Image (tube, rainbow, N blue to C red):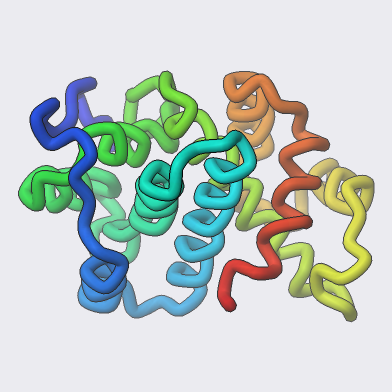
Length: 197
């Protein structure tokens, strides 16, 4: 899966985005798995909410949202070359290189691209954790209502629960973002329930 490069997109395309409609059309074409679409929508929502929480403009919030929404767009159709296809697609569409780079760095162990910008780091931080908290919500009688950080942390220690989620990546992403795992979990609990509205 290694991308074998660290430069993405064209500097002249800075600020360029595709519309939300175009983004969802791309997902419709490429992704049939509803659970995967839910995951990407949740991560996109968390990215937008986090960008808003640090005072970024609406334009920047949308850019963060796109990175989250499209980060796994090629996972279902092209799992062996995950990330390659979506990066090429967004480069062909002249999308802002920062968005493309964030997608390229959302799994440094797999793609060989280090998260550097705040957008990179937060996409990496939310990716695995979002899926984990969602899995926990599905086994609770009240979904997200009343969910506590300590409950999520207890599940993180249970290696048999949501075993495919990398605890190592969650810890690494938290360290790189300079935000505690507890604070990241709190943010996800507070914002993820509204992701699909």
